[in-house]
Amino acid sequence: MQFNVKIRDGPARIGEFLIKKKKIITPNILFVNTSRFASPDFAEILVTNDDSKTEKPSLKVSKSLFFSSHQTNKNEFKVSGHLIYPKDMPKELHASAIAAYNKQNGICYVVPGNEGTIDEALDNNPSSFFIVANVSQLFHQQSKFVDFIVELREKIGYQKMIHLPIVGDPTNFALLTYMGMDFFDSASAILAARRKNLLFPIGEYNVDDLTEIPCSCPSCEESTGKPTEMTFDQILNHNYLALLNEIKQVRNAIYNGNLRELVEIRVRAKPSLTAILKCLDQHHYNFVEKRTPITRKSKLFATTNDALYRTEIKRFQERVINRYRKPESTKILLLLPCSAKKPYSFSKSHKRFREKIYNLDNPHIIHEVIITSPLGIVPRELELTYPASAYDIPVTGYWNEDEKRMIQDLLTRYLEINKYEKIILHLPRAIIEFIGETIGKSIDTEIESSPTSNESLDKLSNVLKKETTSYDKAKSSIRKRENLESLASYQFGKKIAKELLNDCEIKGKYPYQRIMHNNKQLGMLTKERGLISLTLHGAGIIANLEKYWVEISDDFTLEGSVFAPGVKDADELIREGDEVCVLQSKKLCAVGVAKMNGNEMKKSTHGEAIKVRHKI
Image (cartoon, rainbow, N blue to C red; front, side):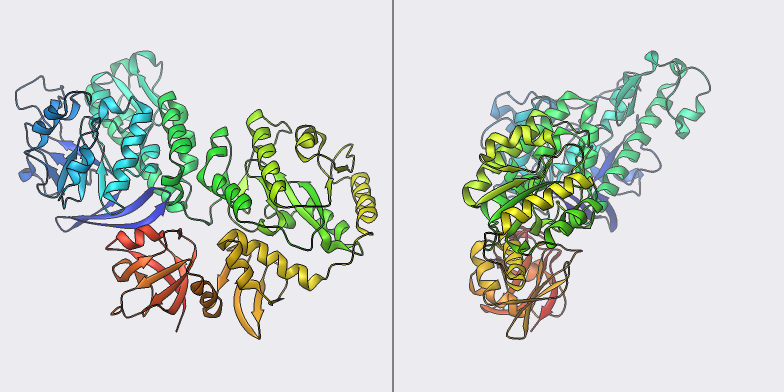
């Protein structure tokens, strides 16, 4: 068995599983194939107790482990107790039940519920395929389930597969894949059919409760009567198709970089799924964050309160507070509302705001910061970065209590670090009402209707003229350099930003600007990426500070991309999408964009680690 990760979306991934010389794309479904339950024709990989009767790739499981060995009613699907023993049973019971099957044929069974069982299972174990035994009970204990899955994925690494038996169905495929699962099975379809239940991504429905069949799949189309007249085989085939359709939805979402949006839709089907997502977001931020790229092309749709806890949102907020520093020349903070169009300065409203600012005699002492949900606060210099450049929210004019507390907290922390002499508010009254006490003394432009009305803009212009005249004039060239230094502090940290931009000149028109030093280009800002892309000259500065570096093997021949087998060591600060310096024998040899995080680069044996832009 061989497994290669191809595409990542947070902890979720698209992989290629090579088994019996056939390629299986993951995440995928192991379809049960027995004398009583034949797998559907569209099944790509099977789980069976007799693989001699099929040419499809299959995982053969002992009759005494996964399937009952005695005769039963032909419609009965009976799972061995090895997989459903209560997790709280004595550790010795689980150990004896699975000892005979572990470490064979590359498959390992892991038992949750007992401290140290993951370490014991991994001890001297070369397996690449891990099955979580008796997960059915654990799945209903949401916080313990999340803790166990996160621990398991952390300990087995990035290039091994996890299969969750029994529990996977169309309502939870998206969530479980988002947590890093690779394989499910068709057991839920069989068990639901035994209960006369039809599976859907929004839940399951008993045919006795339906007045008409809410589906037009081939199996349901065969049923010409009432839902109650559907046969077991028709219900089962519908359920099989429901599994297939949803796993395709999940894979498409990963390809497009919007699996999280699908997760937030699907968890509404069951309170238990919402609880699992909350546990993951609020208690395992580091697990998700290091697997989440820092930039992507897809739009972030923040349609629920869950978005406030999204990794991309929390990471943006923490970087604004802990890394970002305002341009030094600025003396006046101007708080502005967000716009529907992103980036903000390309919207009609912000073009009008900026027109008023740049008509002033001394515009460069003004620092614009946008108030918005779910991001909180967005300094103008960061408007091109993800997710500030690509998010969308439902606009109602009302702010819930979670949003208010989030913005109040961020503003308080931001103003403790970034000091201004004056603060001007050009915001709707609804925002001023809940941030007023947070910011203390300020000047209100007293918007009466819309911030972009002619009357409001005239008031903004008059206030700015009055408040900027008493300051020494700031130079445009200096402010341009400071703007990119502020962006660089968000991207790399304050120390690197200062070294990178020291004594530099900025050329080009925003949003395409080049960082020049002694006629050498160090890096460039582009609208598409929203971050500074480094040249070899710029990478040399960062490499000297021992950050964002990857050391490749001395015998590695650098021709195109850097692949994981060539990586000796890497800075664990690196995230997918980061600019990285490639070192060989401690000397800079290339610069490029990370395709994995630093930890994955070190531990992986397959896959592209760095897409090289320039090399020596």
